[in-house]
View 1 (cartoon, rainbow, N blue to C red):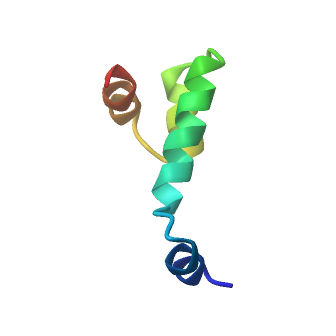
View 2: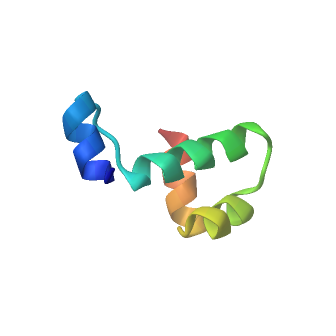
Length: 54
């Protein structure tokens, strides 16, 4: 089943970006540095820093 069909069927709102943000948060909580997190999730360290400050 495609993701779009699954989200319609279950009523859950989900996207790949949410997985990236979840991974980034978990890595930050585990003490990983911003540069490593940025490389793993495909963002710049500045973007990682901005999201982690929120």
